[in-house]
Amino acid sequence: MKVLIIEDEKIAAEKLENMLHEIDPEIQVQAKLGSIRESVKWLMQNTTELIFLDIQLSDGISFKIFEQLAVSTPVIFTTAYDQYAIKAFQVNSISYLLKPIRKRELAESLQKFRSLKATFSIDFDALLDQLQGREPDFKKRFLIQIGDKIKKIEVSDIAYFYVFEKGIYIKTFSGNSYPVDFTLDKLEGLVDPGNFFRINRKYLVNMDSISNMFAYSRARVKLELEPQADDEYDTIVSIDRSADFKKWLNS
Image 1 (cartoon, rainbow, N blue to C red):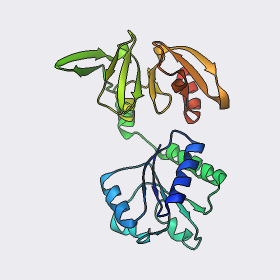
Image 2 (cartoon, helix red, strand yellow):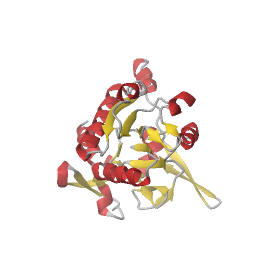
Image 3 (cartoon, rainbow, N blue to C red):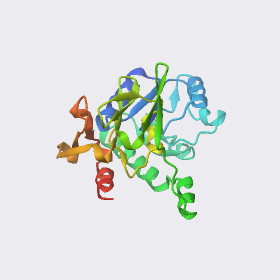
Image 4 (cartoon, rainbow, N blue to C red):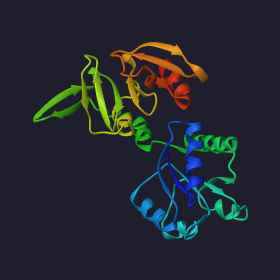
């Protein structure tokens, strides 16, 4: 999950970021901003899934952000003032947390966001394909450039996609690795979800690459892949994906 923190107190912003990572290590804080001006500039150039927004910022009341541009992103307000609650719920707010923020309340707000997202998120293109009897158009192969050579990799030959340092790579069943110019988020929509599943923020795996599965702590599942992953602890199915992963296996 990608989130934006708008908070003018550096210590409070860092504390919130740490609490979010304690609740869900896969949450990615894209930026921590402290003013209306830089928030408007950032939102004009970027997108995020969820905004954590303090009400009183260094250059004014944060509601002015919504006066300068249309924001459709859900907002969780984090503030020491309760008199703005009614106005907050007029601008995409799904929760209103009073400082000092309690970890339990923060976790409940995140769960509320996920529930609402799951309820109202509809892939209209996929729905139209189903109504018209069309098969989804997934990629069959990737073209990889290595120096001045271009190599063709069939999707059926791919064991998994993975993150290494700052890049995304393909691992083939033959054990070869190749860089690919897509994010894992983008790749999820390019390959057949019946064959590939995003187990965490680092791995998108082909079902045929799973050689063994083991029960792990907190109802998670640890996978043993073939070819073997560089770090076996990177192939643990994250908590928020475990239920969907088990449904995927049984589909």
